Length: 418
Image (cartoon, rainbow, N blue to C red; front, top):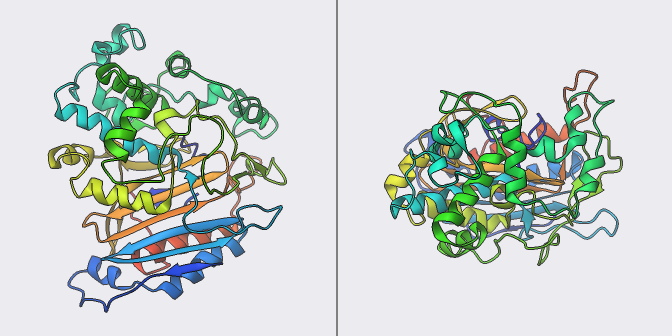
């Protein structure tokens, strides 16, 4: 899921939506470039300070892992349960939302390498029953991967009480609770997306972000492999990356240590409601993964090093174009990957994501030497004004500082506009 609505994680703007652990830091190497200079600013005390700042700003719990040229820092601040006071710690499992899309895109690219899928083949060649007629002939696999298909997102239709956004009198959290244990089928979600007015012509120069695209890609994987997409991804992406705490939950509960996940829903849920127990069926291979920050860093390191897909496939994944997110902002998007350029710091690749009550951002510098994965356990904390615009909140600036420090050793660092 990636319901950004101006308040979720924002890799493009580096503004997403206290115990700490620091491990050995060898002497820094003399920097030879701005990116190397940023990498040399690996300061566990500064990381601890900005992480604590996110908690002090109002986030119940935040935890992270930052890697730099063989050095690793892990930290956590705040609570995993606001009722009991149980603290968060850095190795908790977490719903990582649309970070899942990179895993799904990598699985599709593996099938491209094997000749079972062609990136520019019409999706109707594989799924004529799900995308029939002219749409099926015009929309290609590549267009699903980079969100240029013109197929709308299904979420506003699966959760009808959201359709009032941004009009506060018409918007409610009613469908969040109604769908907590509802079992959606992929075909049902795809029908919801395809029945809505198109967001544009297939293959346009800019895309519109849509979870429907990745539900379709999950069905494509199932057709060509004869295996459920989640199972294929587990065997061929998650296992290949050596991840031990990542997977698609079969039921509404997360197995293993995890935080409660609090949804504020723009201040309409006061106090924020715990949605850590929630069925996964409406997310699937689009946004359904549970992982740890350590696993996410390990995954992106392996992907960018050519150990999950070939170098030529990675080159395809890194061909970006402008994509409009659900909050109206524009991101640079490839095939399941965001591109984030930070002047004086470097070029980063990764993804962000959210589920009800859970937010995640994972970015890796292009040379693989600097990595950041951050999790938060409350979402949509900004109240909305009468026009539906989010009011500023101290959490916003605190997260900017955390991301700048984690990526660049500079809490004031910000990404360039796409």
